[in-house]
Image: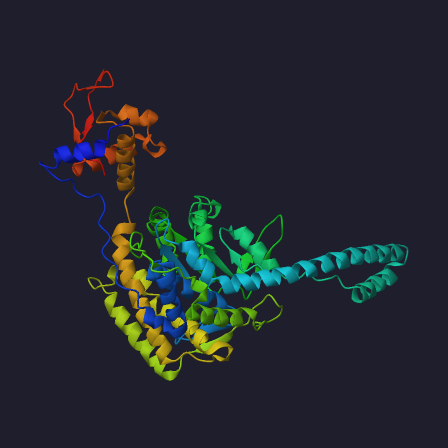
Length: 503
């Protein structure tokens, strides 16, 4: 049985010194201002928290994301400076494994998934009819082409034009798929060309996206740039030599990605994600875990709570409503929602206040890229809240709803500041943690670099990265250098180290 070197070493050294932490501890989160989500969303989030026992902020993220998905097909927000933007929201949630992420989404997205399933049943019947009509059309077209083959050139041309008019090609039905979890840019284009114009990039396992093909070293920049374009409401352009080119207009995409801390930290600390502006568009929450405190007095299914039944009715009504379209049924033409006069004055005051807070040395200077988009995100949230309250009859955003949006966006900015130190971790620190873990798992109390370079974690078989990791552990008191000539693994070493503490 392998000895527990963590307790042995830490006990032996506790009388002399304590090592320095490698990471800044994550400060305590402020409570999510759930009341600012309004009566429908806020009450539903609170009911979820009470029944599923997941963190309240996680429940709030989920209901807000579902509301954005329901509203984005029908409405755009007209910003006070004249730009029209989608009601699409991009949300990222950090939660431990076992935090019941999927349990929340199963309830909140029930309306959308129920409608998707119903639509898919009808789609299958339409698809069968389409395939039969297409086969018949091809057969008739072949016969007409044979008849026109012997005619004179001008007559043949006239005959073909008449045949095309009298025998138009059948149109394929629109695929009613509403959700995607890990699409590539190319796959997303094909889906939106053939399917619903309003989709949700939703997943309770964001590692599929963050660690998948779409976000690998070759595709990450392209994927994040495209997601930014979606958030902006731009057309989806594609130019390809092999399978054609095109532009898709009037498409909408809402996003909610949930992942464990180690996975999401990779994205939150990614220089490309920050530099590209992707994270500046995202609303991030990293709530404290509720695991270990989820005691129950009785069993209750969340879907039976009146607050969640009401949310289901509101969302299903929006999902079932036919959106306004432009040149085709796949090109959305959402109704514009302007801010009323009081809301415009409130937005102006908020813009000026945020501008002051972004100045060098002030509170929001470190996250000015997020702060620069704060009022726009607040207006989007306000538009979503207005639609949830007033439904398809919504025609403007009031100061009441914008006030709620501004309270929420201030919470998200504080959350961004809170997690910044914990999320942005140098490579040498993560490598140091990996090295310490590897040494402990194998019971090493002393080692030389060759042992790690030949048998250690793959990323540490790089001499420079290993040296940086060792330096980090030495400086913070986890390792200490041995005297030259110390025998390690039967070899007299020039350099070696002893393990004093384990991270």
